[in-house]
Every structure is written in structure tokens, then in C-alpha cells.
Length: 139
Image (spheres, rainbow, N blue to C red):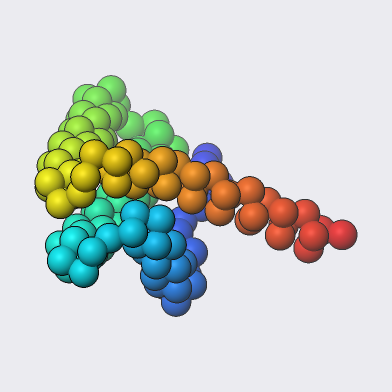
């Protein structure tokens, strides 16, 4: 019996459509020049790929931790896996910070601020819509 559910990202086809829609809305929100778009889009794709890779790595490592707990692993094994998890998180945040700094170089301070807010709002709105769809399907 699994201790925790693995939510996972949406299926690949849906995920791709969602990412493209998000990027289109973001480009509209930022009102980028053609030159900016050519620099920003590859960075957005990189940020998205890093986020997906991080999620996958986290899930695999959490799966290993879960197995060790189920098998009543010794403290040393758990400590080692916990350290790996924390290192994974730390490396991800360092990489994300580096990519965001690169992105910031191609945007005005106002555009970068809009990007940061867009990221938060898009996620909240998506979560809200998914919850609404679930509620409609329950009824």
C-alpha cells in the first residue's frame, strides 16, 4: 500500500497544449518585441523543461524514500535519501535562479515584474478551473 498519492503532470499531449497556451498568454501580457520574443521563448521552454524534470526527479526519489520506509530501512539509508532530496531541491532552485536572471536581462523591469505575477496568477487560475471542472463532473 502506498503512503502518498503521486499526482503527476497531465498527460503529455494535454501538457504540451497547456504550455503553448500559457506561453502565448504570457507573450501577450508582456507585449514583447520580436527580438525579445526570440530571446525569451527559449528561456521559457528551458524553465518549463527544468520544472518538469525536477518534478520527475522528485517523484522518483520520493518513491525510493517510500519504499525504504515500507521496508523499515535503517536510519543511515533514510538520512542519505533525505540528503539527496534536499540537494535536488537546492540544485533546482539554483538553476531556476540562474535562468530567471538570464530572462531578466532580456526584459524591462516592468515586463519581468509582470512575468512573475503572471506565473502566480496563471497557476492559481488553472488550479481554480480544474477544481471547478471536478465539481461539475461530480454532479
